[in-house]
Amino acid sequence: MKLTEEQLAILDWKEDCTINAVAGSGKTSTIIEYAASRPAGARILYLAFNKSVKEEAVRKFAARGLTNVTVETAHSLAFRRIIPGSRYKLRARGYATHETAALLELSGDGDRHTAFIIANHINKFVSYFCNSAARKVQELNYTEKVFDPAARLFVQRFYPAILEGTRRLLAKMERAEIEIIHDFYLKKFQLLSPVLPYDYILFDEGQDASAAMLDVFRKQPAVKLIVGDTHQQIYAWRYAVNSLEKTGGQRFRLSASFRFPADIAGLAMAVLELKKELGPYEPVPVTGLGKPVKPRSKATIARTNLGLLLHAINYITENRKLKHIYFEGNIHSYTYADDGASLYDVLNLYNGTKERVRDPLIASMKDMDELEAYIEATDDTQLAMMTEIVEEYGNEIFDILQKLKTLHTGDAERDKAEMIFSTVHRAKGLEYDTVYLVNDFISKNKLEKQLKEAEQNKQPVDKIRLNEEINLLYVAVTRARHKIYIPENILPETVAQTSHIQVIRNKDTENRNGNKGIYTPKTSAPYNRAAAKEKVWSVAEKRQTHKEAYQSWTPEQDEELIYLYETDNSLYDIADHFRRTRGAIMSRLRKLGYYEG
Image 1: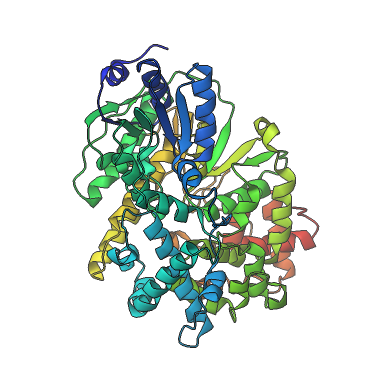
Image 2: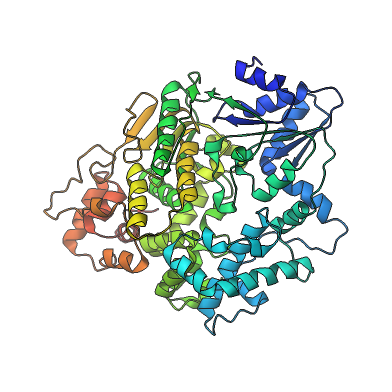
């Protein structure tokens, strides 16, 4: 391969270095060439961020004939040092909230609801400690990681119980009384201050390293190279620390992207300009050198599981001749929270059929209002997402999810998919010819609103999270090789539409047929959703907004509904027109024999 001057400068350097590489700049290729240019017989360790990156790197180093390179993840290194021959038994996933509450016999002042909230924060505190460089739990202040006002008040009130519970849970793992989690053995590895037997250590995707991983890396006597993209750090929720800003050595940059053309590069730079709202920001030069491609793969990328699932549901209901779709990762993971609660559990709680709820946490809730209170006290975004879907689609969820699974093609037939769906986290490291962004990313208006509200309420601003929200949009934008479709309210003001950048108009003013509003021969006025488009609805408010959702239909409304459906209006617009949920529209059309799902 022909190397750029930036790449050649890195290969010539003999000491520690840090490389900030923009999306699509060939950083993995640079690392491989760096390893190939080291002295023969040099012992080289390549540290990958996760298992999938590790497996890809093994193939690439083998193809280059580099047999002196060992490829590992931080967890695989730690596993071999800590687990074999020990008393520890490894747990496949973390402890669910109800499991932690039971293990620690939490009372919550006699309130089971409170005990679950305490357990939720204990699990988060354990993760925070295990991913930190701290040697003792007491060195950390978990409250500093809680920014939601309701959750913060709860943590402040019950901090002694949360701290004591965190120490007890870790002690139980240490004594092998309970199974240990993956982060636990990584933490033990870090606390041992291991010296690794390598001459060179190459750390890829370094921006997403935890403080524990970085502590091990920095203490090694080997020549150290760390590479990543400062603006692709999207794992702060896993306590990543943007290691590129915390390492020493000579600093290099890879600024030319071979993935996308110049105008998409300009869009990426404009997205990063949002960081000026958070404080001093040094502009990042991104040069787009991507060559024209024949578009084949199409992907829809969302910020959240909720945004993606809602968009996928809308896509399959609006495209009636669709044959194949594909979800990056396991499609079932989009309907389950990390704790194990499923969308069906929330739906059964919503319907009042608690006897069908399998998840102990959801089963402990009296009703949806109590679940909402739990969500607010824990800032549990995944349960909030599930609640939103249940409120919107009701019992139509069963048939909708079945249709999604029927249309979903297997991994071996991924190329058949007419649309690939992915969250931005799952799309990281991947690229697609055409990308459609879901309207759930940060925008300038949303950012300014959050900063203003924090100032008015005299609340701390979670600048780390807001910075990551901008990074998430940057990562999503830079997945596109040829063309990107971006909602108009997300598009930076300085960016114009081009042949490679297409603007998705707001559905409040223009439906997918290009008509202004919804055409109907009747006189009823369409519901104006624009005033609430930036609002986050609570369960109670959502119910109030859609209180007419399942009221009886009149013959006149049925006639109007059939007309709107047959004239190819979207379910989104029809639902807004009738002030009902999309689930209610689907249900009525099904009863009238016009919708088979």
